[in-house]
Length: 341
Image 1 (cartoon, rainbow, N blue to C red):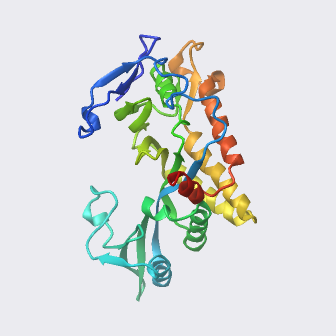
Image 2 (image 1 turned 60 degrees about the horizontal axis):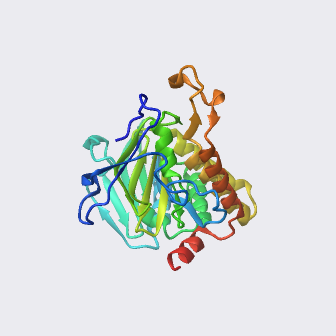
Image 3 (image 1 turned 180 degrees about the vertical axis):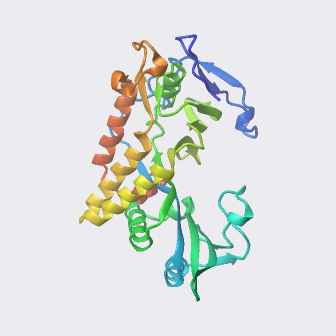
């Protein structure tokens, strides 16, 4: 776990040293690096010469819920999710959070091989002499499910769910896959954090971070898992580096509604795709910030309005959004071409 070093302006980067492949990352020895230890061509620093790179930006997880669905509405939802896929129903309590008391867990769980998990409870509602049954539900769409959908299909799924059932969104993960492995300025982000030039988060976890041949291997965590936005930057099968933003509660609902509204108001599928890409990028990268607090009388009380954004972060975001604006291939096509290269 990294903490800002307020005593030494020449803050050190803490990464981990390569160790045998069968050694867990958390057992790696500590390697001390200065902010200038990486060459300008290192993927851990922003390469200003990069102008074109393939990005696969997409959803990677969705959790939604609803309460008091009528039996007709529930059966319609169930059919929409499972009528064309193999599934298994498990008649025992379930909840995505394992420490949830059994009294608050869902009575049943239905799981598909495509990566959908539905928890549901049936309960009686009484009105005078009349009794009717309603359903409380929670659905998890996992990364395995989204991996087989284009971004346009992901967006249409959200619109379909929202327009028919007005679901509450609890969690929505945005993934940005960089196949060049040179885009995300990890080294500069850590250096800025150690100097205290960060906004939007208070902690960085490098326990599982490894630097091998100037390449990021492992995972860097940014922020708290209990916050409304938690970020992980990690390698995925060594094919690419993924920036994964886990949005929860208010932030998740905001993006969920935005994607649904875009589908409802945009007529062209190309505009659907472009608008969705930009919306996902804003959600994944706009919450955190890096700004120069050195001229502030009280750096701890510095505000964004009175500080200048650090050059590396401004340049990185400009390159990111420029690449998305110019990218014409779909996320699945980017994935196919890059992984077969």
